[in-house]
Image (tube, rainbow, N blue to C red; front, side, top):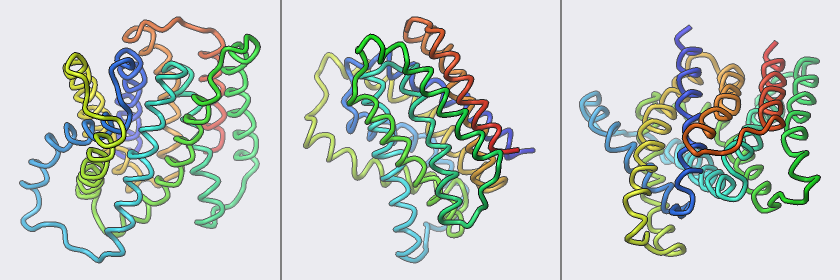
Length: 284
C-alpha cells in the first residue's frame, strides 16, 4: 500500500510542473533551469541524507555509472526536453505527449527484463496512443502545432522510459534517498556548466521568476516527487509505479488552467483521460 500511496503523491507533485513551467516559460532556459531545480531539491534532501547516513556513499564505479546515467538521461536531458516542449506546446499538451514514457518503460521491460506481452498491454497501448491522437487533432487540423515541440515531448518520453529501467537496476546499489541525492548532485554538477556555456546566464529581470519556478518544481517535483517515485519503484516495481503516474496528465489539465491560465480544451482533457485509461488497462 505504501508504494501506491508514494506513486500517487509523486503524481500530484508532478502535476504542478507543467503549470508552473508554462506560467514562467518566457524566462526559462531549459538546461540552466534543470540545474537550478536540482540545486533547490538538494538544499532540502542533502541535510536529511547527512543526518541519516553516518558515512558517505561508497560503491563500485559500475554502480555509480548506472546511477549517474539514469540521472543524466531522465531528470536531466529528459526534463530539459520536457521544459522545452512546454515552452513550445503549452503545459496541457506537452504533458500528455511526454507521459507516454510509461509505454516506453513497459516496452523496455518486455525487451530487457523479459516481462511478457499481455492482451491488456496491447489494448492499453492502443487506447493510450488514441488519447495522444485525440489531444493532437485540433492542433494538426489548424496546422498550428510545433513539430519541434512534439519532438521534444516524445524525446522526453523516450529518455524517461530508459531512465526508469535504470532506476530499477540502480536500486540494487543504493536505497531511494541515497539514489535521489546522488542523481540530483550529478544533474547539478553537469547541467549548470552546460547551461551557462550554451544558454548564458539568466537575465537580471528573469532571476526572480526563474528562482521561484525552480524552487516550486525542484523542491516539490524533485525533492518530494522524485524520491517518492524511486521509493515506489523499490516497493512495487516499475510497471505498477509508472501506471499510477498516468494520473499526472489528467490532473495537469486542471493545474495548467488555474496556475498558467491556459485555455481548457476538450480534446486535451479527453486525450488525457484516454491516455490514463489506456495505461491503466496495461496493469490489468
